[in-house]
Every structure is written in structure tokens, then in C-alpha cells.
Length: 368
Image: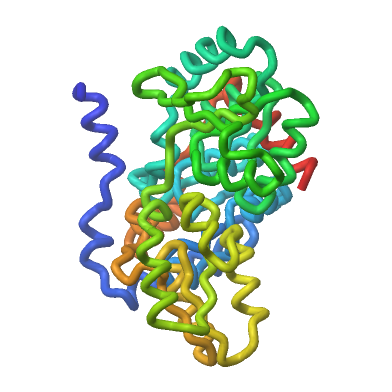
């Protein structure tokens, strides 16, 4: 790290002032700033955020909902995104030039998004074109960098979320014979399987070794899965399911499709974050659920539904560590900086990257 990079990193560190404030002081600061700024300020909050942060969100939702609301919002001059880096990038891409997007803590990233960088993706594309020719359409989960979204957009593809993945995979097959799905192999595999693609028609691209992991004839391949995963959802296991089945005879198991195929296959239901929330909300009092998704959300569901028995499918699960980077202190710092005219942790995607990424995002939004 050079001197300039060191100075920049230091400027993004939380000042001592906010570390020394009480919870009440932080909450009062946030409330006052929100009141003063009114509609000039917009705070989207992802479902996986802590309760201490969610209480100040203007809207809450999963990736698709927040992407749509960011695209629709034209009133706010300042958008303080309580999520992770790729979500703030998406908000910047979809909003106008006059709107500014901030991430309260620049350390709030996504391990899955980090499993596919643009250099690996370009190398993979060249490799796969040699193997399969011009028969592949790329799809990327929104849990990816702006650079990956831009690459996909430039090559005729689109983004997907866990809410609309099946629709987007069907759309991709209407365009090309094969698809490349990145960066989450589990969502890609579960989605393709659900629409009728056999497991032996799916290959896995290993970006570290630059090889295709597949034993059958290449002409049989319909889906190429990027070898990436969610570090939270991959921790739900078949053993977890076996334990719940033995200990809670009437309990239903509902999981996110970022879980492995084996876990999804053995569960009663699988769907997006929003799907999980709605399924539990619609269930009768007295019903019992083991939920395979992020722990902040599971705990929120437990507190919101005292008339139901809700547990985590994995009792040793921790919250998403990167989502948890954003806390009261960082939110207060971000809002205080905004109202003082300081652009701390401003998220800005360059024009060329944003143009092609917006193509990929809009192709998704047009289908949603």
C-alpha cells in the first residue's frame, strides 16, 4: 500500500467521536438528521442488516426490491445504502447523475462477489468460447461487482436475483443454447434443476485452475456454473436437516436457494429471502419452522412471530460478517458527513462500466 492509499484508507476509518457516543446519542443524531433532510435522504436497508440499523431504514427488502426502489427513486439527493458494496454500486448505476450513493462502511463487502473478478471472468469467457463457440449467454447474480455486471451486459446477458432466477434462466435459454451462471454455483444449479435441466447437463468452471469440471461429453452441457458460493448459506448441511427431522417431527424446513442442492432437495420449501418471510407470515399460529438463511433475519422472524416456533436450521450459525460491518456508529458517521457536505465513502461506478452494467440490470428489471 502506497502513501496515498494509506491516507485514503485512514480517511475511511470510523472517527473516535462516534465510537465514544452512547446508543442514545447515536440514535438521536440519526433521527435528527433524517428529520432535517426529509425526502432529500433515502436509506434502503437489506433484510440481513442488524435491527439497530433496520429501525432507521426508509425501505427494507431483498436485492430485487431494493434495486427496483433505487431505480424508481428520483427525489432523494443522498442515498445511504445499508447493505453491502455491490448493492450500493447497483444503486449508483440505476440512479441519476445528480444523486449520490454512500456505503456507511467500505468494509461491508460480499465473499461471494469476491469469488469472481473481471480478469477471471474475461479469461473464462475466452476459454469457454474455444470449447463451445458462440452458444453461451452469461447471467450474473446481483451479488457480483459492477465490473462483472458490465461484462455480462456487454455480452448480451442479464443480472438475476434469487426471486427471479427461474424466469431469467428461461429467458437466457430463449436467447442461446447454453448459459454461464456466476458467481454462485448453488443458486445456478438449483434454479436450472427446477426448470428441468438435469444435473449431468451442468458443468462447473473452476476460475482458480481455469478448467471445466465435467466428465461427460461437452455437447451435453447446457449450464456452466461458476465455482463460487455464499459463505453463510453453504454452512447449512444435510446433517442439520437430519437433526431437525429427528428432534422436531412436525417442523417444516425452509431454506434459501444459495444452499447446496442436497440441502434444498431435502427441505420442504426453498426460495428467496422475501419468499421465506412471506411463507412464515402466511403460516398459521402454532406452526414450526427451521430456517436456513442469515441469522439476523432468522432472529427478526423469531421476534416478529411469537405465536410460531422458529429456529435456525444450523444452531451454530453466525450472522453475515460483512453485512454486520454496518452498525449505529457507521450509520451516524455517514449521515453526519452527508449533512456537513462531506462525501465520505461515496460509491461511484465509472461511466463505461455503469453503461453496460445498466444494460444487464435493465434486462432483468424488464422481465420482473
